Amino acid sequence: MNQKGGVEGWNNNQILETERLYLRRMTQDDYCSLCKILQDPEVMYAYEHAFSGQEVQEWLDRQLERYEEYGFGLWAVILKETGEMIGQCGITMQDWNDRRVPEIGYLFQKSCWHRGYAMEAAAACRDYAFQTLDMEEVFSIIRETNLASIRVAERNGMSLKGSFVKHYYHCYMPHLVYSVEREPKHRRRVRYKGTHPRRFEEKYKELDPLKYADTVEKVIRKGSTPAGMHISICVREILDFLKIRPGQTGLDATLGYGGHTQKMLECLKGEGHLFALDVDPIELAKTRERLGKCGYGPEILTIRQMNFADIDQLAAETGPFDFALADLGVSSMQIDNPERGFSYKQEGPLDLRLNPEKGIPASERLREITREELEGMLLENADEPYAAQISRAVFSEIRKGREIATTTQLREIIGNALSFLPENERKEGIKKSCQRTFQALRIDVNSEFEVLEEFLEKLPDVLKSGGRVAILTFHSGEDRLVKKSFQRLCRAGVYQDFSREVIRPSAEECAMNSRARSTKMRWAVKA
Image (cartoon, rainbow, N blue to C red; front, side, top):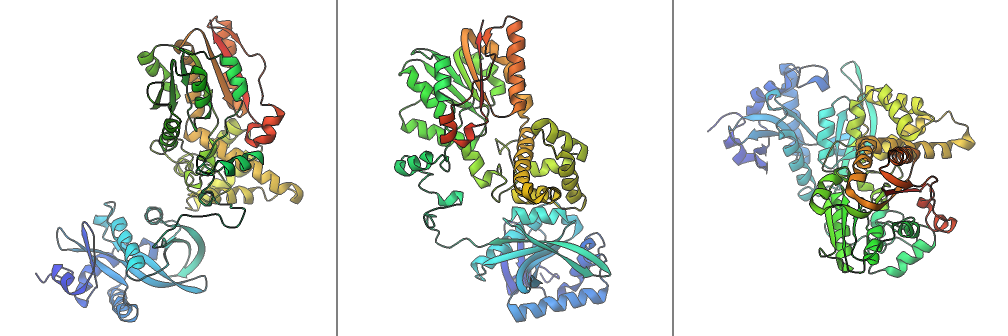
């Protein structure tokens, strides 16, 4: 067939093929197909006007010149199913930050939007740039209001690199610059750089505690938590209270790294059974493997990916428990891994979900709530004294169409919002507000207070008479909920006793593990 932009042109000018698309060089025969795209005002909204016939011709001529000069440019995107040219996508050289950079760009017919064609074509161009053109880094330069293209760039592995304002067609247009670097062809294991590695992935010895036990011990002795590891808190105090005996059945409602779990299993001495729950599928799999290597298999330990709010469902299968533990803190492995987005200290996606397979990340949550709701969240979940200033700054960015997609973007916004603080107080003030803001968002994204309230209501029903429960909390909101629940249910005769005062880690433990300092332990005994 000899259709403009059709399959025959593909045979002579082939560049790329994907599952649904062909990408080929454009020719003068593609003028009419290109007009359908470049003369549609909705498609061309980023350019502030639809092109005239002359502008379309100039655009087409420029692509042909790029093919001659660089060997690449914007290519015709052909839908395999019909042979129709539905868009253009490719690589062009653009000026940014006083240098020429390769940019992936595209435009598609409006009838082909929201079908994944842009993502499919852009990903193919990225791979072509790295594998065929041997480029080290590729970019996408996007108007800050073009949220759909920003999402494509992020799904293409790109992260925000910078911004600038372009003056075009009588308008000042703020643009965001995204980029992704090529991974090394032969990736070696990341090793220590010097004697003091800083990045999570560089600390390979700490990430393998069974093999490098000496290194892990040194890190702990210095009062730090090894990367990828979690040091259990109040172990002695918990075991002293729970009084675990061989033959009992127990519940660890928050498995995490499995440190408390292992100590409770040791108390059972091979008799009885322990059930352990966690919502995090990533860390759960690692902990199951770790405990299995220590000899704790399904004959004495059952691990479930389950929210502890559903303990009634578990107890319906197992019967009531002699003892239970809930450690409400986020595990160090989650905090330290930048890919999980829990910490403001390192660049990572602003996610904060304990189970990344459920719910929406914090970046999306910020887009859907009001400024007043965010201010209330910061006050209720973290007692943030600068809640008003931070919420105003966040929504100022959102109104400008800027997506807050990374941890460092949010950290920068908080820092700018608190620039009024005296210089001698600013650094510490920003640090504390970052901690509280991330805590408040994490609590909200995971519905932590609602889940905890449900757990506390169901807890007495899954304990045997005389059954004991210990709960570790790490901030005032959690502690208030636990305290009030134990008080109320003890007055109602559901519990025979509960802790009137909190139990705290020893000074020695806090010196060895700085993350223990905010810990409070409360306990109760079923009537």
